[in-house]
Image (cartoon, rainbow, N blue to C red; front, side):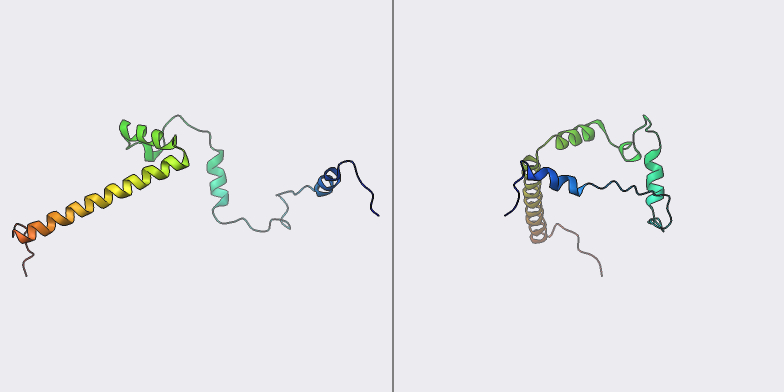
Length: 114
């Protein structure tokens, strides 16, 4: 027969605790740095400046507004937006294909010279 505890979860959780301290300066524990990690960590420690990132410099106001709008969507709404864009792309491709075929029949399109 086992002993019933008032709250058996407390003992289990306390048995999982570890008070071991891992010192990253130890060459035995951390013999090699991963390539690129030191540079990435150094770049993260730099103070944040007020200048926008390089990729944002070329964005126009409407692009930024669209990014904000897309960022505020829920996952389901974002998926719906993507499906709408896929449908639009399909429709545009179908229309372009019809126009190209029509142009060939009407002999409007230039044919490459051999």
